[in-house]
Length: 404
Image (cartoon, rainbow, N blue to C red; front, top):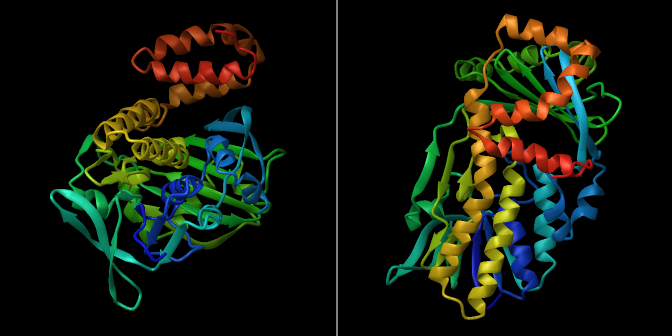
């Protein structure tokens, strides 16, 4: 590009690349800057809670072409028992190096979108209290200035753009649980590709089927266990083998690469934007990964921001549009955020009494014959402080024929 771009996007992963796709469709001149080169991995969740945004971005066919298994079911283990059911629709669990690269390639298919890899943004350009661009250092150490009408920070939870623009955090909660994950080959599969969740001794395990023969195994552990696993990664697998059925299913499995971990994800919202700048993705909103909402939340923000930018082009007030964007964003993110915090903060090890009784109930069809008709009312009563929980179940049930 010879002239200044209309929009600079700092960060070219899910949030940044998807926004670039949407702006490219509009004919906007976009400059993507990222410190990484693509394809490359990043510490992240992998679970796409649904595929509607992926379809709208017109990348589903290419994502599926990598051979990912279609996930049609969910299974939750409590001790040595489990409950399983179908999903309303299938989903996919891509590796981030693959998924991000698909999005980047799609963005670059538009002639008005450009990408500079290996560029570290280390300053923002301001004039008259307005962000007007950025300074970035390339791999050779050369510093470049780029100017645009709008700078978007899609640069993660520790966003440099947010910091320099003065974006304030609100509704903050400290990280609750350390998270570790790794990619394993040859885990013995169950009959159908299924997202498996293990609730065991206060820990949460995740098993995400990816392409055939490859699974992502994840653990949310107790805070004191972080240093233990970080120093002795083999402890990850030792814990995983305690989950129901996993001792035998891991017998022929091998770790690909290494176990990756963090002390936990911060939970917050940030101000969505201001004079000449905006935020999307984890830069704007971060939460614990246990509910698997992060990637779709990032995509949702990109669609909303693209709408705001289009309205701005049509003569709307940026001040009013960014306020409306933040309001819509927070309304959309609110239920998932509250559910996530409630889930991780209330998660505890079951007492031996509770677990023993559940194991006996789980194996007794006469119990379920009596209990199932009363479960909706029981859930409604138990989620009075968190009505989003019952609401989310009711919404999902609609796809199976439930009528409000």
